[in-house]
Length: 177
Image 1 (cartoon, helix red, strand yellow):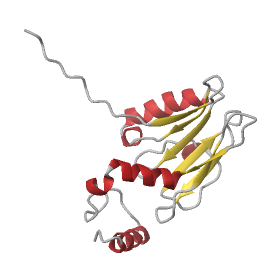
Image 2 (image 1 turned 180 degrees about the vertical axis):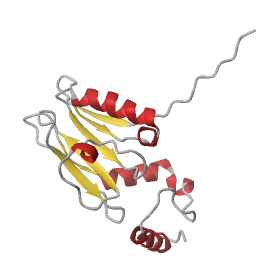
Image 3 (image 1 turned 45 degrees about the horizontal axis):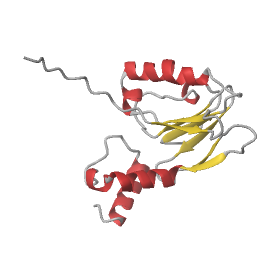
Image 4 (image 1 turned 30 degrees about the horizontal axis):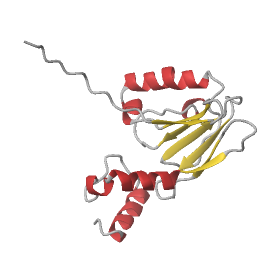
């Protein structure tokens, strides 16, 4: 008789690589830290000390889009930078391969459109522009999230009074409340 075994579930860690057509070289890696990277000490350590550091030790560009407002910070800006970003709910970073000590930070508020980010490519190619809002909108539509998200329930992340009022107005305007 066979013995039945079950593999442990593994949370999918999304990322995107932009590959140069001539030679197949990965130019930037675009990381989207997951709740596991932010809420569990082990997941945070594995992301920050292993995956992120391995990428930062290469000449490759790294783009991080942290769209989870709770949990431990994942970007270097949150702990080591000498400047404070303006008020924000989310942060995204662009680390350019040869300039690791200087990087771009995109502070994102909840009530504003997600930004268009400059994504570095390999010289002599100019930066490309990634419209984060368009990507998220497409992901939302294709994933059927309108049917999966319970808009009448309060969100799991705490909101400021201003954010709560903005969100309530938005959801009422769309007929969700």
